[in-house]
Amino acid sequence: MEGGMIVFTQRASTEYSNLQIEFVRKRIFGWKWGWGGGYGISKSSSDPSAMDYMSMPRLEHIKSPFPIIFGNVLNPVIKRITVETKENGTPISTEAKMVKVGAERNIWFVLLPSSASTPFEIKAFNEEGVRIANKEINDPNDSGALLIED
Image (cartoon, rainbow, N blue to C red; front, side):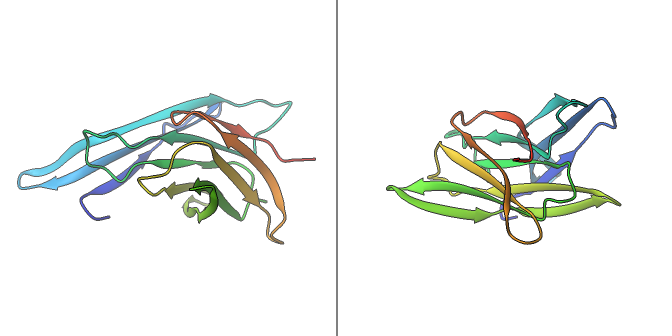
């Protein structure tokens, strides 16, 4: 992306879901770290999560592509994700980019406009376009999981 690159990393674990995001910039002598963070969420066998997420706000003093919301897709029935924000009261829906990172594994992310602020609403859809999970986020530094709706 313009000004640098976003790098996703994950530690291997069957106990929890985790994902790390880093923004790095190309400099004369190599890459320089700019900003990043990550999360870890324990897996529950009684209520398996459909997807997880972390929200990272834009920081005034660091040039970066944030705000961003990103996470793991944990249920293959999820085929599309959007994040809805409001600008002057008007809803704006942004489509997530889903990236295949393994045989049966996807991560997702949404780069939000720099003017975006909470609340955000994450929505997940199945192949037929039916919404199967959603959650409103009110904290710009939030992380958590979404369950399939009954």
